[in-house]
Image (cartoon, rainbow, N blue to C red; front, top):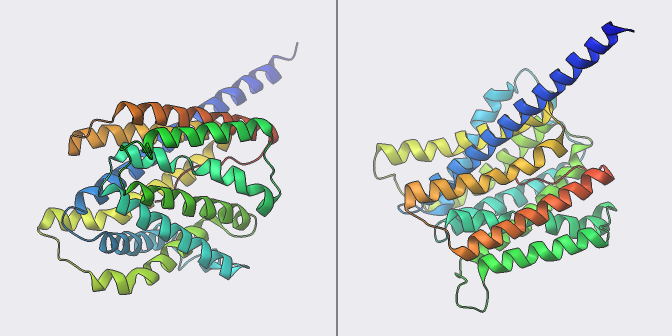
Length: 310
């Protein structure tokens, strides 16, 4: 009996299990960072324009990313064979962030993230004509059920839908386009370059609007919170990248939904928001449908789409 091979396999399994656990921990931390970013944007939105917050979020994001990846040592990160697609992708991310920050001004954090988490359904629906990744009958059924979950959260036509929910729907639409373009660019461009280029394009595009509506923060706390928006976004994306370097994406994707837990907790602790029954029910339907789509994508070996656009 070759015990040496058995021991090696056992150690290999232990190492793999440890890597998965580390990856899960990192993805949960990433979701916490994104939730803190949204909570900070909601808090700051009480005293300053959303466009100003968006501008500072991307400007500080670029500065942090440049130092994080030491771009002066690796300028090759910024090389791209499809600059137009990179710019359009960045503008989709910018539009997602604007819509999301506008939404959190008026809606509970749990409501905004429940609607945004329907983005994978839209991606699955339009990936066929754009990428040739056609959804089967089972995944279409999951898409329909997920859409019903969004309707449960928003309650259109029943007097429960806040007009600002349209911002979350817009964020979902632009994120779906952003995710599809990310898939297209991931084949040729580096993750670091995509992260920096998206932030840089967004920061430049937002400079005129950000300056035109500039409202000085009311105190030091608001200055600190404003400047940390880029930190939380950058740190979240860094944890997200490390997690996917450590463990397989299909193992990590279900834990993206822990962001709903963070959003509910922060919404209650900071703003005293208690999610409605419809939010809980709708979010549960969305999560269940999303997990089924992730399961089907794992079977077909298609990289799962996760919500990380902040």
